Image (cartoon, rainbow, N blue to C red; front, side):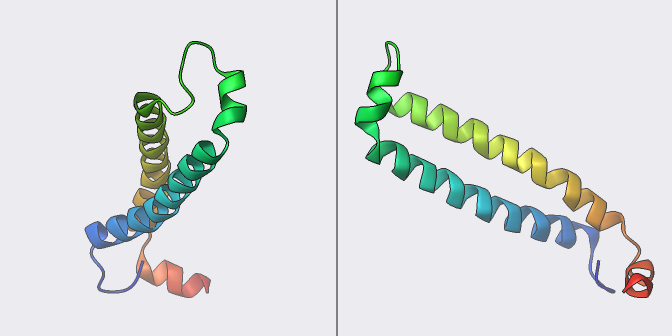
Length: 89
């Protein structure tokens, strides 16, 4: 935590950085899944390989999981005293 930074700014910054990575990963996964449709079709039962509802649901679950995973470090970073952090370095 930087001197003068507000806790909300720190939480927002950490969550934004984490979610950028998560969204990039979800997008790459969707592209890879669409590229490998034939292989996926042989592994799925009673679901189309390019079913939009499945893609949306899985993407939403992954994004919410990433958001939860970003919240804990963000809250921890916001609680750090700036002077303690500066002394540590």
